[in-house]
Length: 133
Image 1 (tube, rainbow, N blue to C red):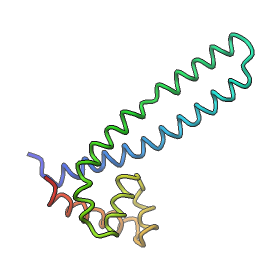
Image 2 (image 1 turned 45 degrees about the vertical axis):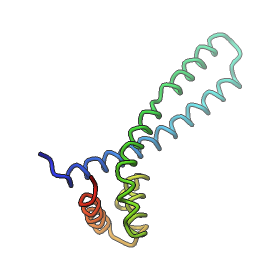
Image 3 (image 1 turned 90 degrees about the vertical axis):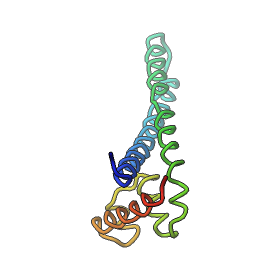
Image 4 (image 1 turned 90 degrees about the horizontal axis):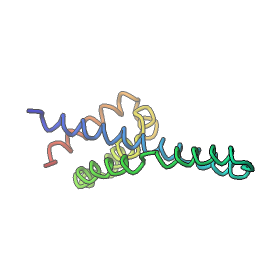
């Protein structure tokens, strides 16, 4: 049977990946929205309307809702334990897993090296794993 620590690590990594995916999907939707606006301003013939409709389909097919639901599920599971951490550790965990910040950036933000940030996050995850149900 998988240890609680491995499960917590796996789920928090999944949250980090999902958070990153959400950011990228939102950016992609923004790009498609701008393209639709540009096409609408240029659209004059029937062929252009077909291109416009295809662009709208692409914009709507982005599965942002699914990623958000996946993130929310994991966030709900761990938020209670994360809120019990001291403010510095809490902020670091939120930036890492909820905001998808990479370790090198965490290190710069919180005064660690990249490896130091990774080790500190590992220690915090162990605290969370000890208390999570």
